[in-house]
Image (cartoon, helix red, strand yellow):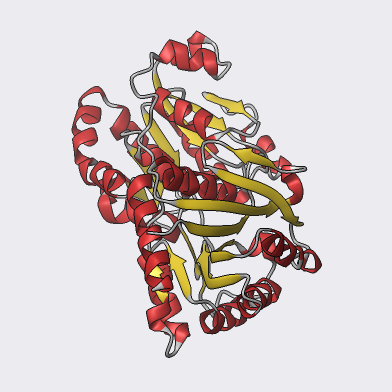
Length: 382
């Protein structure tokens, strides 16, 4: 079978972006399984002059600027320099490309100029019409007409696009977000604390961790209230790059909370998860915005109890372990679940209860999801 030439448009490390981390994990799985794919990443210009990613087997080149639709034409230049690709795969998030349809137009131009045989988009966020305020559904309507295939991660995203897609239902494919089994699970906690720059004293007692960017939608105000109710019964480590300085003020001085206010790599999030007794995701989602949490999938592979909210981003948790879910914005609900989980007897009962979640983590492993991507590419190419 001939080697498949894959061109990917996405943010990419060292840029601090969840979509970029997702893309790298996907490409590393494609490369690691030796699935016969050569990869060109046309990345946001935060990658500097570009580099070769050995783990992903990908050539990474700066090709556009975050939020600047006038820069997207450079993607065509990169494709031309490479002699074209078989599949052009665009990892889409509205915050990166705005609601402009320019990225769709560029993809269409690439196909018409024979720089790409097929065009695939992954929509990391799908909007319901009642929630769209800036033209998101107009973008989605244009996309289902132009793309050869659209990948989404959740049933909510899939069904919402079905409702908007008219006669293009066959273009929509659901491939779950990939999951990595945590490689640090057998690493001693003292070693993990040292690698993360934490004192040994942090290991005393029951440890809850909250990983990821510190933003208003992460429910940190709910976390602060719940932690105060627990009166020091649980040690809470909140770790991530602040995207809103008010988040630091909310958590400052809360008893039992330790802040690590900096960007954490995927490896560091996995270390923190392995160190924990429970992982907290007290998220809030606006109505009608459907996405899937990458942090949830990193957490699932750590085989620890996960407490989260009843929001679309955590639909997999809500479906597979509903008794570990509380109502978004309810600090008493979070505090109550933490009290149950931190009990010496309860913890041993809750770990096996979360078994379906761990089974799902294995079923959605990155190598399996990479194979599903490759099968889609091959099907589109005939």
